[in-house]
Amino acid sequence: MKNIILIGMPGSGKSTLGVILARRLGYGYLDTDSFISQKEKSTLQGIIDTKGLDYFLSTESEIGSEIVCDRVVIATGGSMVMAQEAMEHLKEIGTVIYINVPLSELKRRLGNYKDRGIAMKDGESLDSILSEREPYYKKYADITVNYRDGDDLEQTVDNVIDKLNN
Image 1 (cartoon, one colour):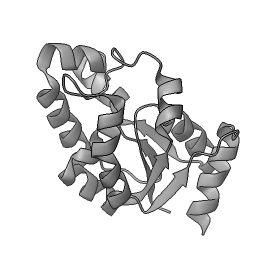
Image 2 (cartoon, one colour; image 1 turned 135 degrees about the vertical axis):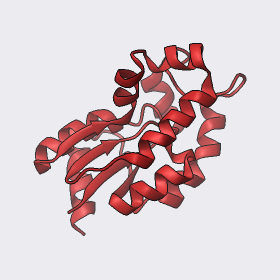
Image 3 (tube, rainbow, N blue to C red; image 1 turned 90 degrees about the vertical axis):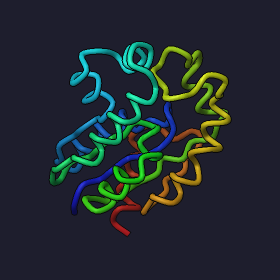
């Protein structure tokens, strides 16, 4: 199996699922948001606040386009899906899995999301960015894993592994 790329909205659990999935499969793990934070020596929100949203999105696209690895679970930032070049590259190097979580659950998980480093323009809401991004999540996904109310993390990881094996 090649790499596994997790895409989805902020709060969908990509990072948490990615760590567990990588451990269960014996894969490495890469979180692109953490990588960007380390590279820039700042939080995502700090990058957006000081250098601007366009800079952040450009950096995210560049990183997604340049990843070279094997047998790694990659948790992308929620906005990576808007970077065509990055997503085409990621599809070439792995299986893309869309972690689909309903808006109501995203809102519950994120709470006050204004300082979470979510790539959004002034005036945008979680509702509007989901509406904008969802067609891209569906376009690039090789597999979609739908959130099931009541499933814990291990059950969701089991669901991902089942879909990968089919």
